[in-house]
Image (cartoon, rainbow over all chains, first blue to last red):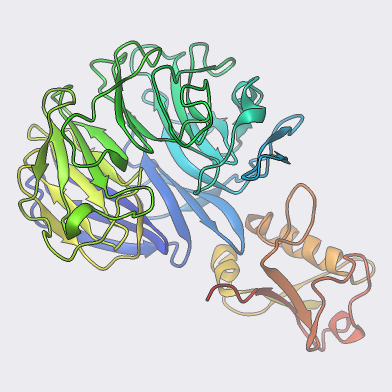
Length: 371
Length: 98
């Protein structure tokens, strides 16, 4: 292994952190696309030098950048995310119908097997696919035109499609999550979709068990167990062992079960990580202490991981796309905070180190192990 | 030739440093100037106007001759001093934030 590369999307540009496999000394490169919001940057599992970046801003809208040399050079690819066909309505915050309106791309998910295939998740919620490396995007309309879509409603952060999981075994199966519609699955490559929210309970909606309307913050999967999904919901940490057909709560002894990211250890499919924050009103960690919680039992029993993390006067949040794990023999875990720190652990979370501080607020962290 | 001043972010995207000059066939209107800019710099398509509706993006402004022309009809003639190249047509990121 020659090294590890972190792709850190921030409110004011993209930063690229690199290290050798020891993961002790990090070089920081950036900002790329200075001044733009980088909601997400993600590399291809087929060729790690192929990187896609969602570049957006309030003034000039949405762009997509692509690199074929690991982030040394970039070129702008297509950014036409027009909704296909009839646009339709969803519910607005006040309960009135409102037409879909594109705002930005939250998440980019390159294919596990095909270099030029990549998916993009949009706000307002829609899923796009490119089969030519981003030169052209086409909407998979079956999701946005699902019969439940007129009942979807934005969360406080907007009606964003923020999670895309491409099943590692079944190429026709994709999971997505939308705030605040919930989780959905396709088993036919994106033609038809079904809500997979049974077992979720959300006090913030009139029917706590509704088919849709749940504010799912993030879903994670271990590639060796594709039917097992872990979810950080608005409140509650959840688990499904049947590809999302049924969910059960695994919050267990967490001090609070509100949070955004969730990740699974690269080699231990029952080891999961969350970063609880105080509440839906207080979007920062509890008691001024930054604690990652790890469960080695697939949930219910959790332990705080604190070594190397600030344990006083800390009031940061970690956003849903801002946690990642690497696949080195000793699994590395990384996350970025709303205050611009990137923390990393080279020992599965036992100890942590600030890799860089004082970046702009961090939207996303992805990690690549370089051959 | 019509002189156009782009805001810094768009100059970076277009890989230009200073003022740009574009040939505008026919009447010099906001629409024709922006069409010409987008034709020469296709990476800017969608950054100033919605690529579907053609409407100005909410936080983009068009200034010329010390006038805010943002809300003028896109097919209205721009001031003569823009058409003659005496004054630039300015694309501006609106003041936003607190």
